[in-house]
Amino acid sequence: MALDAQTTDALAAQVFVIAPLGHFIETDAAITSWRQAPRAGDARRYLGWCLRNLGHLRESLDETEAAYRLDGPDPISANLLSLARMASGRVADAIPIFEELVERMPTMSFPMSSLLRTGLAVQVVLQGRQSAANDKIDR
Image 1 (cartoon, one colour):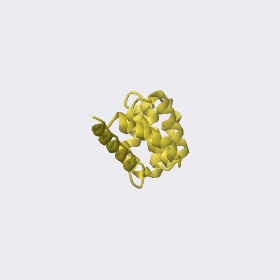
Image 2 (cartoon, helix red, strand yellow):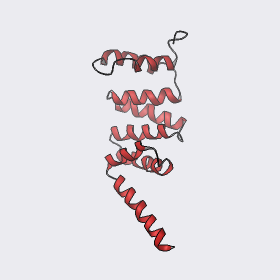
Image 3 (cartoon, rainbow, N blue to C red):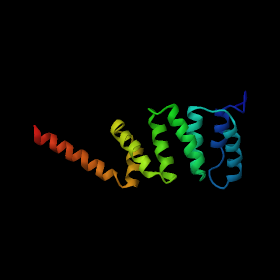
Image 4 (tube, helix red, strand yellow):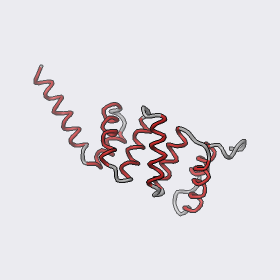
């Protein structure tokens, strides 16, 4: 940061060191600077997360979609995209990504807890158990 306070890492760091409560004006100013800088991967991913947490849902979804396009296989990018879609009212568009993450990353807790919020996690778990039971019966 001392070398170049305008790099995306430095701008992100400026946002993350602001106290989380009661400093909305400072946070918004730091995010505005961050948004004006060129950014890729992680910068887009975490900018989208910050924007969502501050209620800028449309902008958050745009940033998070762009981050996902840059690195779709990354489970954090996929999870954050699903959360951004849910926050912007596109729950049905979030569910397939959560389901894929649960299957691909069974030890990752975030997608399952988010699926619970959609009401489908129970169905996914029950279907998996039923499938496992059917496999045992077929043997």
